[in-house]
Structures are given as structure tokens and as C-alpha cells.
Image 1 (cartoon, rainbow, N blue to C red):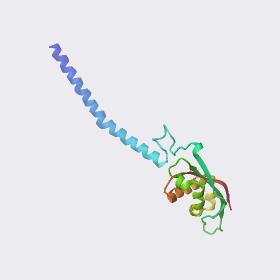
Image 2: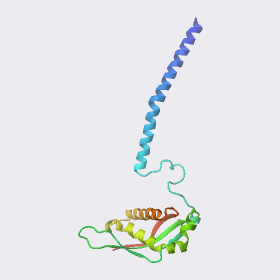
Image 3: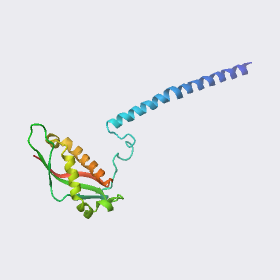
Image 4: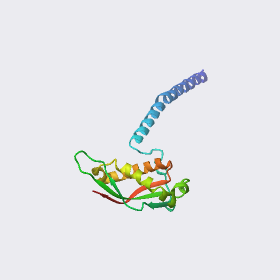
Length: 175
């Protein structure tokens, strides 16, 4: 009698254990998945790369030995966007393109002679991007990275490639 009573208690505890496990599976796990998705959306909204926070950077890492720079020969005088009732303003910029020499498209687009052939296209693209910014934005140091990123995105679109790693100003004067 004692043995069968212990078997019944063991069976009851096993059933309770399974019931609690099902509660965990169907109540807590979906809630945790929803929370994980919410955190992922928040990180995306504030431009954090959650999946890369433990390993490589969000941007493509290129060894400094593989970086090649190309200075656009002459500085460019670029008209800035006008604000109502304000006079014309210009930016004088010297642009440096930083490229990945190990990229598969570098030989096709990134050699000095290929870039020299397309200098006018590159300068025109830079002018179009720069012309979207007002004088107050261009003078604000916080916008410098935004302008460089916008130019970089426009050049990636122009070339349909991301062999250009970065765009920097070697000189920037706003008037």
C-alpha cells in the first residue's frame, strides 16, 4: 500500500512538473521573444548594431594597410542651400576619398586613372549632396560626419559598389 501511495505521489509531482513546464513554454518564452524584438527595434531606431556589439564593428573593418586615398585635385566651391531672406553662401572643400584596395571593385573603379576619368561625375555628385545643406548646418561640426556619410552613400549609389570606404574633408571653409 505504501509503495503504490508513493507511486501516486511521484506521478502527481511529475504531472505538476509538466504543467509548470508548459506554463513556462507558453507564457514566458513568447513574452521574452516579444521583449527581444522590442529591444531590437529600439536599437535599430537609435542606430545601434546589436548583433555586432560583441564582435566586429557595425561598419566593414578594413586593415589600414589596405586603405588607399585619392585627393580630388582642386578644391571645390559649392553653393549651399539658401535660407529665405539670406544671401548666397558657399563651401570651399577639398575632398579625400578613402578606398579599400582589396575590394573586388577597386581594380575596376578605384585606380587613379579610373578615378581621374570620372572626376567630374564624382564632383557633381558631391555638389548635389552638399547643396542640400544650409550654411548653419555646414558650419556645425556635428553635421560634418552627416555630410561625409551622405556623400559616401551618394558615391556608393553612383558606382553601385562600396569600394569607397570613407569620405573626408582635408579642407573645409564655409562662407
